[in-house]
Amino acid sequence: MEILRDVYLQRLVSKMHNGLIKVVTGIRRCGKSYLLCNIFKRYLISQGVSQDHIVEMAFDDWENLRYRNADEFYNFAKSRIIDDGMYYFLLDEVQMLQDFESVLNGLLRRKNVDIYVTGSNAKFLSRDVITEFRGRGDEVHMQPLSFSEFMSCYQGDRLSGWNEYVLYGGLPPVVLTKEPEYKIEMLNSLFSETYITDIVGRNKIRNVGEMEDLLNILASNIGTLTSPTKLQATFKSVKKSKITVTTITKYLNYLSESYLIEYAKRYDIKGKAYIETPLKYYLTDLGLRNARINFRQIEMPHSMENVIYNELRNRGLNVDVGTVVISEKNQSGSVTRKQLEVDFVANRASKRYYIQSAYAIPNEVKKNQEIRPLKAIDDSFKKIVITSDAPAPFYTDDGILTMSIFDFLLDKNSLDF
Image (tube, rainbow, N blue to C red; front, top):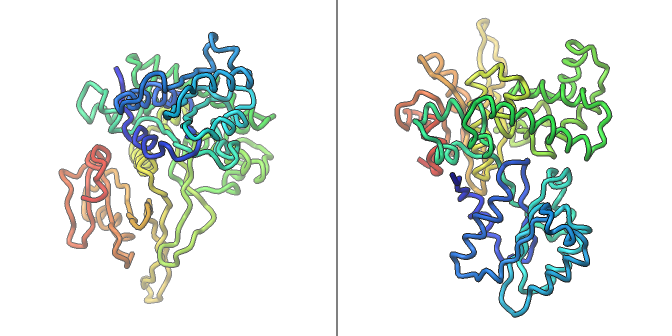
């Protein structure tokens, strides 16, 4: 069964012929190679590009071993360009090509060459890969399946699909595996044999246990405000560890650079300024998150918040955590200042959305609690509450849009209802 990745196909299409090397990045097994060598290739052919103007190379294929040599590949590439038509180079596992940065930068100097690459080693699993192309790289970052993509291949109703998605995540090979025990085995294997190995190898980490402990703490506390100082206190009290704030900060950067985790900064909505710490951390894939904690602590409210964050990022929005300071009188009549939290402040170009994640709103008390921070914001940007139990999208008398998690995830235009 094929899972179409139209969002990423369109991102590649939008970057065609821009004079840059298109670099598809993302964690292992998120579908980078299939996107490039199957979905995008089919698109090129559908647009009239002839097969002899599409140059494919999988550098991890034993038959292509000799082309890992820089001179061999460069001579091969030149031999394929025999006219003035546009040639499309689709290069998989390009990190295996010797001096790939220089080779591809050299090839790019030809006016009729358009280059697309993907890779899977530690370098290609880090955010600084674009710098290797000396300003000539253009990143297309790929994430695991969104819930909408997941449902396109799921044989069942959306509630059953939601429960499976929240439990096992959206990595394509995991999704396409039928038996739960094999899904769990694959997720555990990816972590122990792939992701951790890449991070350790890239950053030459000596105390691997410390970094794994940190990852476990983050996985257990998704969507919780934290900081290196708070994490150090947890290590000290729970692990009796003397790990330093500096080391924790490094580990957080390593995990972020490898795309395993993402963080949301706090933003003072009224003051229009960022608050550096604490931050909120989210896992790129919930299946990987659950594997780290042995499938315990599957709290639906936190999981739903993580899914919403990932969906907003998948739609190309920048996401922060909002804070709103209000003044109110206490029981003694004195005026006090109180800080309220908006789960997400999502921005794209001139648009902004204030979003609350509320798994359930069983009564008026809970409803007022969720919309109170939104009502305290005095600008005109859209305010949204996403819940699991809204029957259909509707606006309150305060102009706040309330919708279900399914309406939000399954309609790409849901933010603009």
